[in-house]
Amino acid sequence: MTPSCSKPKIQLLPRYLVDQIKAGEVIERPAAIVKELIENSLDAEAKNIDVQIDDGGLSLISITDDGIGMAQDELPLAFTRHATSKIVKFEDLYQLSSYGFRGEALAGLASVARVICTTIPQNALNSGGKIEFHGGEQVFLGPHQGGAQGTSIFVRDLFFNTPARLKFIRSKKTEVQQIKKILNAFLLTHPEISFTIRWNQQEKELYPVVGADQYQKRLEQILGKKKHQLTILEHQDEFQGHRVHALFMHPNSNQNDEKIISKFQFMFANKRYFNDRKIHYIVTNALHEYLPARDSDFILYMDIPPSELDVNVHPNKTEIKFAGPQIIHALVSGLAKRVGNNQKNIQVSPVDSRNLEHQDFQNWQRGLFADNRGDGPTSVTKDDRPSTQTIFGLPHNIYLYRLPSAETYLVRPFAALAQLLRSRLDKVSFPLSEDSIFPILIGISVSLPRSRVKTLDHAFLTMLNAAGFEAIASPSADPNADFNIILRTFPKFFHGFPLAPLCERFIPLFWELFSKSDNRQADIKTALLQVVDQLSEVNCRSDEASLFIPCPAFVQSFQQGLSSVALDEQVLRGLFEKE
Image (tube, rainbow, N blue to C red; front, side, top):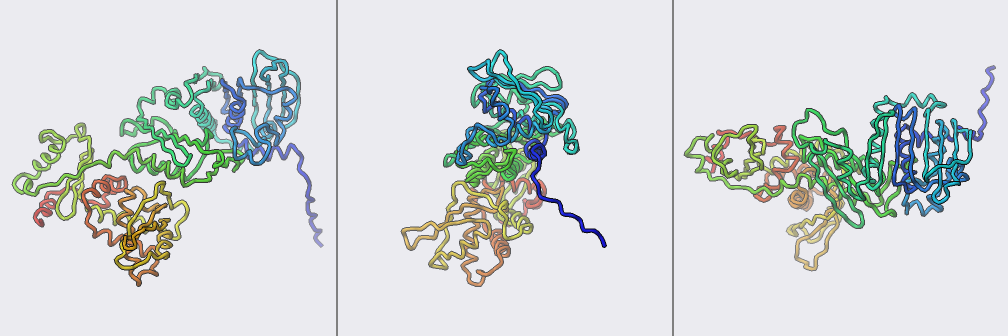
């Protein structure tokens, strides 16, 4: 008989092993240590912080500050798990004014490195202390005296006692890049604090105080001469106590031979650096659509009421939750779109067919664009391109669109719009995921005619919701007035188009289709495609053309040859002959 295997007994893990396991959640790489230690310095009200990094943080991480410090008897507690001065009750988690609150970082750090901490408390310079740990074991505790208040922590030989962890550390170059990103995050959020940074015993980098909220001046310190190669656009907006202050950056030149700055993208909530995939997608997607030929970066400063922010999501505190994420998403999306919003004031100029009938096509073309620029008829070279976009109205609901790059297109706006929507819908699966629906900060009002039905069926609002349009009915005192609904969200397949004009055209067509009893049970995707087909036959007013044609989604499709035809003499003359 085969002897039965004895089942291991349940037992408590030793403290050093618990600390090493927990350290894996907080101290995953050298950059995480730098983050935790600088947060402690900021919580200690430091005005000057000195950082020294050797060998990508594996050999040495040193942080020295002039904060309020600690007394010797507090040192053992500071390195004890779940010991903190930041909170005393659960409710404090939602009124945080500090970075730290979990009381885990120092205990985890001491368990996986050789750590020395010296500290001198404010107003008690003779009560300082020194504590030393080797791989979780306290090897020294004693008094320490010095000339000034503050705390110094020296972290050496990171992961020396957990070699398995070293396998997951990337190259030293990568670790340095991660540390620089963390340091830049603190530099950007605290221009009122002086930082000195030293790498591998080299000359110190100095970042003197520039004053509270002087973010662009601190940015200039970080980027140096590179800042002058960038266009920096600053925007801000606020809604219901939520405020977003944004800096958008892109190269002055369209030439992308070499990126000026590498992935300089930061998001802060109440000066706390965090990662959020959806916010990042909203910003980068909007920037790519408005500036498709340029590498754009951004810095987002968000001021959120503390009670609307949950930072107790993950031990590393770089993941947070918003009580009102739709407000943040709408604010961020709106600010990103402002970057390219100067396109919306383009005027549509009518074209007289007689101007083409009696002259050479090339002369007519040059004269048309030269007149619009205020110049004489000249050829357009690479270095002499018009600085503005122009749209000309032609017969048969067709528009001629001229880009600053001298590219010219013939467009039927709603036919092109329908083609783009159809290609997007072909890739959409229903029901829609949360990531496929975007909030509208200020609701869009849409009127629906009473021509077919006397009451606004709740089933229509349900169908709209399934399509990604959360809508509510807006009651009217006039029983004969058209129905009115307010849209609060829109689907991803509408992204990149002028939202309000598109909804004002699309939703009534959807309503008309729904009002026909034989279409009420249609599959949602089939119904949307039927509306798109109807939209392609709608005449586009000139004011609508001035909004749709220059929008990011259209311009990108023009350049890919998806929804326009190139300017051609035979095609153009044919349009006027039809007239």
